[in-house]
Length: 143
Image (cartoon, rainbow, N blue to C red; front, side, top):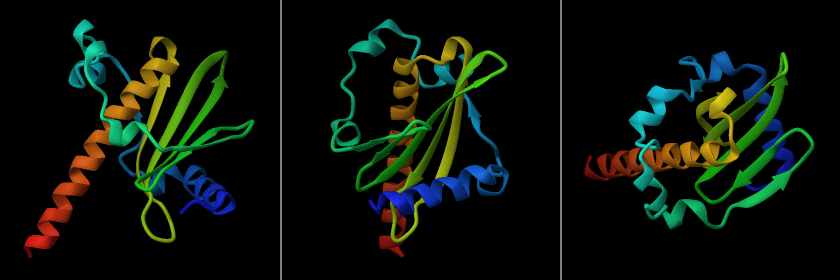
């Protein structure tokens, strides 16, 4: 799906009722998550990013958010200011069929809300989602 108006409608649908679409809630980026993803290691800066995930995104910017679209993912990045604190919300959906399938949501704030860190965490989640989708695809083929 790459129709901008349809993407906007999907974003509105998901963001208006996140507790329905993401019953487990938004994932808060914190020290524990950074440790889990190995993002606190200095050597981590030198690892090769997965080129299949970081290329060929169509970027749509608006005053409200940034939307990234490729053949696998639709990502909405929304910055906000809540009580003088900058917060970034990231929604990740699989780009399947007529409507994106919302997979997860991330929130960052405080010291964890830097563009570099948001993008590195996003990349880690995209890799996990991609690996899970490939595994599910192999399971479906085997049955």
